Every structure is written in structure tokens, then in C-alpha cells.
Length: 196
Image (cartoon, rainbow, N blue to C red; front, side):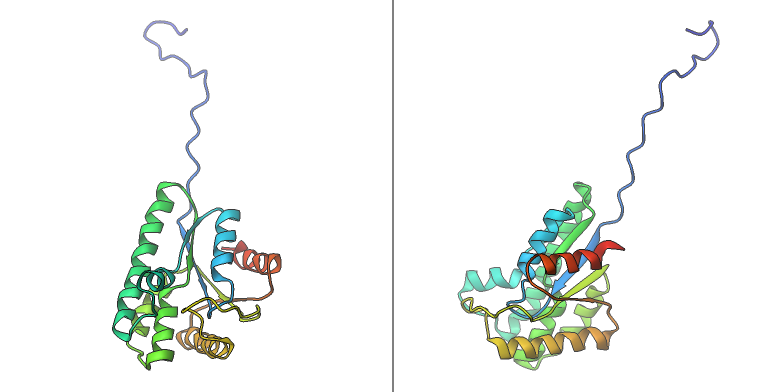
């Protein structure tokens, strides 16, 4: 104990400050139908760890029992964006560094172009897409599997992949092309995210 009138010497170390959490990193996992987006998003969320945002389009189709009409595409895009923003807030609250979007508004915009010849959603989708720290474009190199009303077939899958690739390149958005099946796909995605 120190003498009266003199400040007591600190004998204990100062408590360590909590290590700063990096800004939450958004990752868009995009591609045509039946390329393993959901499986990859789930697996990455477990290994990073992070939050996975399921594709809203799938939920919409399950709830309505049909695919969207042209006038519903903008609402689907907006809902996917809203869910992403909500996930970012949750990730911050739980001190997680990753949010993995299973699909992205750019996919909705590209489908509107392919199916309805509507390019009106592209501008807002591209502006939103610039917020992602990484984009993983999944190659259509997995076997095509029918899955109810959401699957258009291998020919449409190839055409959509080409359109999505063109959208990314035309907009100057960077991306990593992810190929392979199972663990090989997961490892390729993990390598693409390693330096972020």
C-alpha cells in the first residue's frame, strides 16, 4: 500500500481491450439454377463462421406455388436487399465478420432480362452489388437436377450463366469463378475469400 497522499501503484495489468472486429464483409454467392449456391453458402457460414441469407426467391415460390410474374420482380429484389441489411446488423451484434448472400439482386435483375426482356432492375442491382466485398460466381459444372417449379433445365442454366457473366463483366464488377464439386468447390471458395 502506498503512503497517504500518494497514488497507489497499479499492481494489476490493465484489462485488455476487446480486439476490434473488422467491418462485416458481404459475399454474394451467385449463379444459375442448380449450381450449389445454397449448399456452398451453408458450408461457408459454418467454416468462416458467418451468417447465411437464404434466397428469398425460393421462399416466394414455395409460398405462392408459382414463379414470379414480371411486376413482382422488383419486390423480390427489394426483399432480398432488406434481408441482407438485417443480416449485416445481426452479424455486427454477434461480432461475426461474414454475411453470405445466397443469390443477390443482380441475379433477380438478370432473370428479369432473360425471362421478361426487362432491364429496368439492372441499375439498382449493380449499385447494390458494388457493396459486396466478394462475388463468387458458381460455374454450371454440377449435374442438373429437377427441383419443382424453380428449375428451367440445363439449356436455360447455360444461357443464364452466360448472361450473368456478361452482366458482371459489362458492369466492371470483380468476381471469382468457382468450379468443382463438394469439398473442391468449398476449397475454391475459401481460397477466393482468404485475402479479404
